[in-house]
Image (cartoon, rainbow, N blue to C red; front, side, top):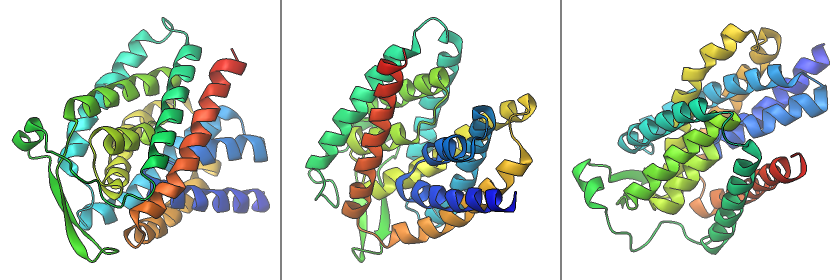
Amino acid sequence: MGLEISIIFGISILAGLLGALLGLGGGIIVTPALTLLLGIPIQHAIGASIVSVIATSSGAAIAYVRDRITNLRVGMFLETATTTGAISGAFIAGLISPHYLYIIFGLLLLYSAIAMIGKARQEIPAAVRAHPLAERLRLNGEYFDMTLGRTVRYPVSGVYGGFGLMYVAGVVSGLLGIGSGILKVMAMDMMMKLPLKVSTATSNFMIGVTAAASAGVYLIRGTIDPGIAGPVALGVLAGATCGSKLMTRMKSTTIRKLFIPVLMYVAVQMLWEGWVKR
């Protein structure tokens, strides 16, 4: 039992570290690791994954908000789309075969990964024009980049596209029961042309809000096992705290190089679920 807890703790530190760096919840590491390596039932693994998302957000979001890397206005604006989408997804669950959604989003993520490869050397988005609605809602922002040693001022573009993709991400999250951190980062990076550090930091803030809203359901269902969720929360919190400090000292190009293989892994995983397991 002691060895199992140590393994869970070690896995969770890695999940929190990557989650804080890339704006993901860590569920893509925690869930398969718990089920495949330790044989923990999938229900309890998903419950622990929800806890890991909250812990990642708690460990990283505080530092990012303090350093003003998180764009709170963009986060709250997009969270309305994600939440509305998640409710819509819950209502239409059962009407649409999830296999098609897995395939569609697998292909979308694969396309995004390829598009990101083309931007692999881009540190800050260039020649971006602010959307009129972004001006009106004061979504444009700035942060001090420790790596570049200067304040980065950035406009927000593609507001309608980003909002729409965020709604769809919420629908998919509600239908498939998956975390949407990777879709949130993709929408802000590809559609709204935000600096990658701002995208991952804002995603960290948003996933915590979404996960906290759904955690009560998992708690009532009894799928959050304290013996598993406890070491997961502690490990993820430690990893996320280190990850948030590391991210501010890394170049965006380095973060993007870490993000692309994770994106491709999730894309292949979704295509596998939709195509092979139908």
